[in-house]
Every structure is written in structure tokens, then in C-alpha cells.
Image 1 (tube, rainbow, N blue to C red):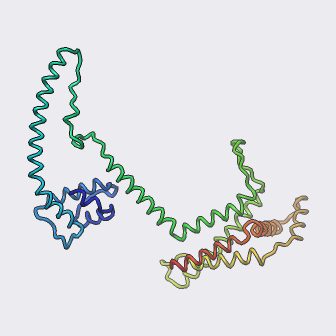
Image 2 (image 1 turned 120 degrees about the horizontal axis):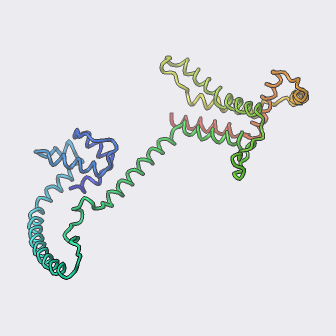
Image 3 (image 1 turned 30 degrees about the vertical axis):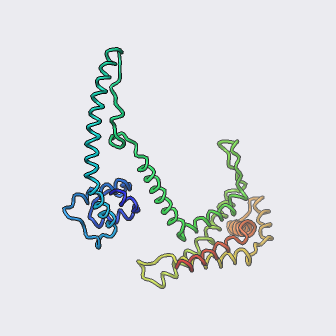
Length: 303
């Protein structure tokens, strides 16, 4: 009768257990859950209504067939027990003869152990069922996680960070431990790149998307609108990459003043801004615009 429940999936067994009001741990594997449901069904005085529980129709059908087979099984077991007892008595006589002629003889009788009757038996099919169900659960979790818009945005931001900062300015030499990371940027330049990229790639689009929802909805329900976020990011990527050009003359003036230690804070800010924008145009090129448009298409498809 277990085979009629084994064909059900784990989530179907869990739903059946909830319908039958059977309390069970959430991490219970499929074979144990099948055994628990079967034990509950056997403890019932009357069979359940098949119309209310259609998944138990095969179970009760096989139960009716197995009742006719039990008589033949019982008579077969009795014959087997009688033949087993005769074999045991003959074996005991042989053991007595062997013990008399040898100093040590093992009394273990493996032929009397039936398959699956011992608590030390290895149920390989249950192990395979466990592995299969766990892999299916992990695959479903990964699929649900990667199919969300925030997960796709995280992948896009990781690619942007690699192309904008890591690939051009960082090198890795594993033979020079512990100093295997080498950076060609100064602290000011690194801060300028991170601030510029974080502001125009995430900060400004998030503020605009939040403000649009702030106008449309009540305060407790305000969230960042993903469609407005990606539209704003695409427009900013188009502006920064194509229509904003750094002032090369002011940068040259800053380099001269900085070498003599006379650069002002405003000139330092303008130099960092133009440096970050130039690296955006050289390293990222069209990728922020492509990622933003892809996010817009995904939002229109999902929402």
C-alpha cells in the first residue's frame, strides 16, 4: 500500500497531511511522511470518503486487493517457518559437531535474516528519494530567487562594478601573498568613482522611484517603483555617457595646482567628478543604458 502513496510528490503529501490534520515536522523526508500518513489511515475505524480525498482512491483500491493476498501469504509464511525450524535444528546439530572438532566457531546465521527485517538494513531507495526531493527543493528555491527583479539587478550591478572599477584599475597576483591585490588608483580617485557610480546608477533612480510612489500612495505603503527606477537609470546612463563631457582645461589646471599643493576643495571636487565621468564613458560605455532598458522590459513583462 505504500507504493500508492509513493507516487505523490512531497508537497502533495504535505497537503494531504494538513487535510488529515496530522502534525509533522516541516523537514520530514518523503518516506517518513508516507509512513506517517499510512499509519494514520490504518488507525482509522472506517475508510475516508474518496470524493473528499481523491488522492486516496488508489490507496483504498490496493488495500482491497491486498486483503485477498494476505491468506496466501500467511500460509506461505507458516510453511517457510516450519522449513526454517527444520533447517535450524539440522544446523544446530552440525554446529555441535563442528564445535567439538574446532576450538572456535561462529554462531552467526545470516541465512535466517530476511531482507529488510533488520534495523541495520540499508534502504537505498529511501536514500535516493531523499536526495531527489532535496535537489528538487534546492532547484525550486534557486529558480524562485533568480527569477525576481532584485536578483537580476544585483547581477547587473556586479557586472557594472567589475567593468567600471575592478577590471581597469585592479590586478591580482596570487604569488605575491599577502599583497596579491594591486590598485592603480589613489584614495581620492577610488572614492570619486564609488560616489559617482553609486549616485547616478542607484541613488538618484531610487530617490525618483520612491518619490513617485510617495505621491501616488499612502505613507505606510511607499516602496521603490521598479519600472520608474529602471526608466530613470536608463535616462541618466544616456545623459552621463553621451551628453556630458568633462572640462579638460580645468583638469589640467588642477593637476598643476595640485602638484604645488594649491588646489582648492571645489577644484578637487570638479576634478573627481570629471575623472569619474570620463571613466564611465571609457569603461562602461553603453552597458548601463542596456541594463536599464533590460530592466524596463522585465518590469513591463512581470508587472
